[in-house]
Image (cartoon, rainbow, N blue to C red; front, side, top):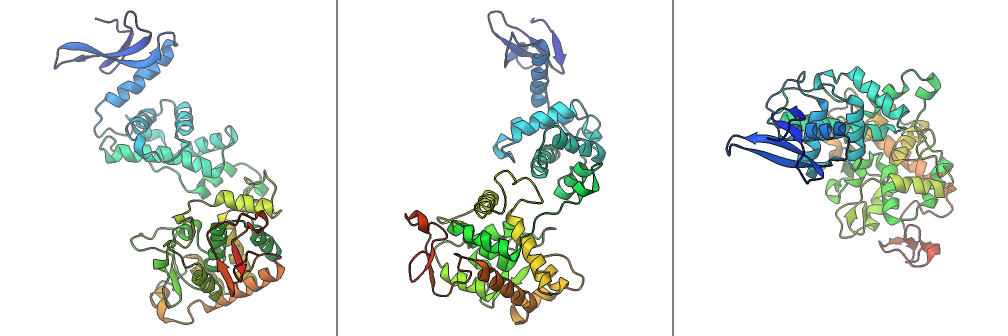
Length: 411
């Protein structure tokens, strides 16, 4: 019988003569023989590392049923998730996330995963690792998914809620810092900056996204997922597609401005999505926003992570909300356009397609803002009258902008 150098459950660590790897041994009652499986860890490796490999191996092999959070290790839950559900991993950062989780949480149990402990971990990722709020949220999503899988599979009897809201993550990071740092607000653009931004747009899909954004004030996902089936002939757009359940990030019905209606008529093509690249819907336009802002001279190359300076897909939404307020549009109307909860507004959308005055103050305000932006632009035609549009980029580098031009020519 191989020497039992170290044992976890039914498995023990050992070596095989002539082999260069550590093995996990166990007794198989069916065959009444001792069986082994390689841990793919060289014998020259420190034995402490081999023991960790055995712990991971045993965690994956063990049959776990309805274990209490006080008895389930966070590391065990993560090991099983990473190895058993590799087909549905939520992020490309999984390897780094798992490494950071395992290194920091150590042998803590699931029951110890309190909000206070999570906030400590968040501050560790921000201060020691230098991660942004969005990256930390992706890291925590791995932990949340691992706990969720364990509960769905009946392995875990219960689990605490994992902090995933970016506002809570930011609050945890800013705890104990100066008030000035905690009070940093995301950037809004001025009319002149908006004009420079639109002048710098170089792709058709980026133009479509930005024009749809300033006319609907929709969140990024609502714009990238918007299809022509959500646009009603009565002049309203239902930002919530059929079959999608409303969440806290409510997607409202919004009125369609004349400016957007003109662009939509111009953009008639075979793709059902309003914003697309060569017939395919786009994902996150964050990098395109950054590159456009750099080209427009609104930010420097390395200012993308500074919330007070960065220009992101959310910037247009926040900018339009502030500019509409400057146009004296009522706060309740702006909130309804943004999809924010306003008491007494719950039934307003039911009659949206039958009410010609539906959020008319917002429509008029958007048109006035576009007038002011167009007065400052040097290249971009903010309205579509007399324009033609193609999805094909012209070869002439000077014409490579939005692929839109008067009388068939790019501007």
